[in-house]
Picture 1 (tube, rainbow, N blue to C red):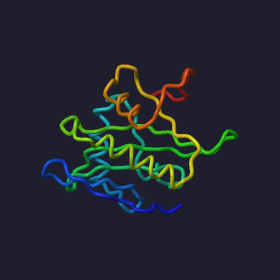
Picture 2 (cartoon, rainbow, N blue to C red):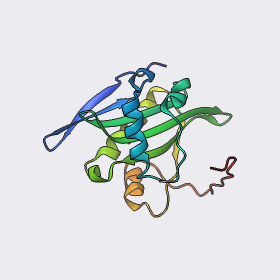
Picture 3 (cartoon, rainbow, N blue to C red):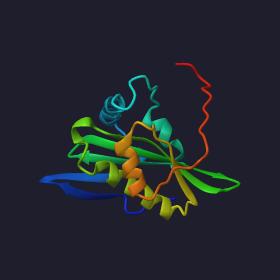
Picture 4 (cartoon, one colour):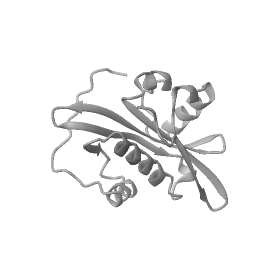
Length: 160
């Protein structure tokens, strides 16, 4: 599925921001470097995969990016998959640069992924968030997400 309406812009005060869905041809060494630096703010111990390998199957993932000029200031990803219970999207790795928080960038990234979920006709969109991330949880609730009563279990398959 080709991404319809790939990008849109908004302003925060006088600064123009652009939200776009990343395509393989958008990937550069500079973008990969900016992404690596941004992800350190999420988790400095996170082992990062290169964008080129993530976008190998572009119908399985949507990557929404926010740029101020050429600077990457936010990113959010949604993995898409099919199971017996339907077609799902899992939002992961929502990160906004510390000096850019409070400007609505996280909301715009999430809205862009939810627009893409509607285009893909997903049945459900899921996400996980740490209980301590109160601002993020407020954002997710305002977008219509609610806490499920089930638990999340994780088994690490690789050691770093």
